[in-house]
Length: 312
Image 1: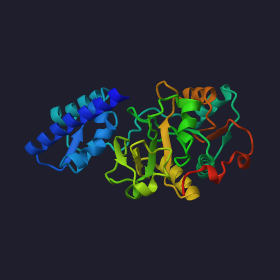
Image 2: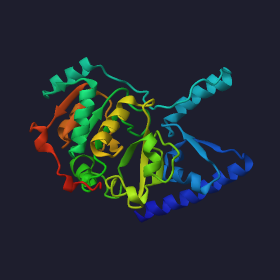
Image 3: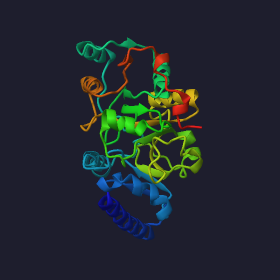
Image 4: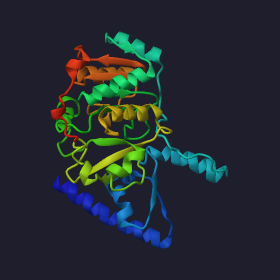
């Protein structure tokens, strides 16, 4: 831990020195970053305090996998001289699966499941999150890059004091000091975080406002920060509406978001999601239009008492 802290500290010294030198040579407000170092969310969140740059764009797969899109863009714009006409606002560029494929996978796995309309599914999952249960959330196209951004995610209540320990004991098995991320409705970011620059790809760490830290105790890191993901309806309508449904039930416009996996690559296919759900102690699987409850007890018996929650 001490070595990691020291390396991060030194990285930031060099990083901000280079960025300040860059700004002196090219005095613009906008900064675009790529490459593996651009995935350092802690440093990215400090750019606005430690450099003169005011806006920052980092594509969601800024590591080695980004070389592919870099080569394609170079060819398209520089070699073929095509006009600029697209801004990457979503990372959901991977495969998606039909309800028939998903239902077949559920049947093959022998899992009882219920098909639900969109609004009913969102309401049921929001109720499960509010009740303190852990949900595997598998929807639409898979994200491109290292972050699960609401399509291949495990979601949970951000305001339960033991939720971090529950996730690590049941599923993630990570070191105690590694935080989980808050996904927040973009219009509430300024109320909960000290910076309002958007972070749609979960690539910035900001301080959580003091009055909101108890409410977000499961995603509040030891230094009172969160590696947030800002969510808009335009970028991910299904995930946005899930957080909105949870907000209506709890008054909290945030859910805890971590990748849908257990010390392995993030799940991609329905079969991988089902296998992860079965071998871990996840409570619920929301996969396409289908809801799977591992515990068959009635929902009213699955509730967590309000005294166990740390939101005001």
